[in-house]
Image (tube, rainbow, N blue to C red; front, side, top):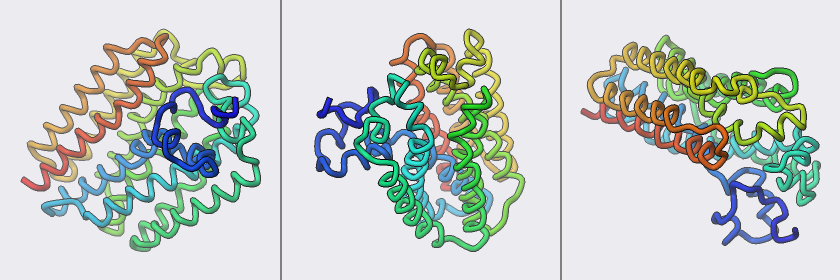
Length: 307
């Protein structure tokens, strides 16, 4: 067990396992640097928003400095959020097969050490945030309550994915706020579309844990939807495409935006048609593939601004 301490099933064979010093491995796993897909999914709405702002303003490219700041901020704040999630869930994680070897649940990191680490990551995230204008800083701070609330929602509602969507989609507001110092219809529509997207892909992710969640008394949309999951994914993914399309229209998007949106929609359709909710490996693969779906849309936005 000592060689596996703090490692979980879907993070084996990564750079943390291979190259990181033993003393820092548990902390890197707390931040999920061994599984960066979550940071990408937090980052992509930020990049969408920055590209949407470029389309609306007639700039040839999104603000590159903002893209870099969002990249750093997404990875750091996702790490802080995951550390907080593991602090809140340490007793539950011990009873779930996929999470029982997380650093706190396995004893590799104490609760006090994890709390100090979460604070440190949050301070780094704050240093990134203060590089933006005052309105964007206030907008970013406003998200913290949702982030703090999320780990507890799975105990009280079958819709914790909505709260996750509210938190993980916040970047859809941030790129526009950083560019213009205000919010308008386009980023709000983008935010709502991103929430629907998050509910869809996190439902796929939650199907990995159905049996353990039932045993632990944890609720999720995967348990709620069950055999109707594909039909509900059609609803949420379809809503995401429509709302994001309206956001692009409100920002003056043209041909290449439509191409990117079409590629995004086709990818989501592929996820629905090929999903097997009883195949945990396929669920994980399709969840991870949402990074590619999001980057296809981002590429279309950038091309629209450029061309």
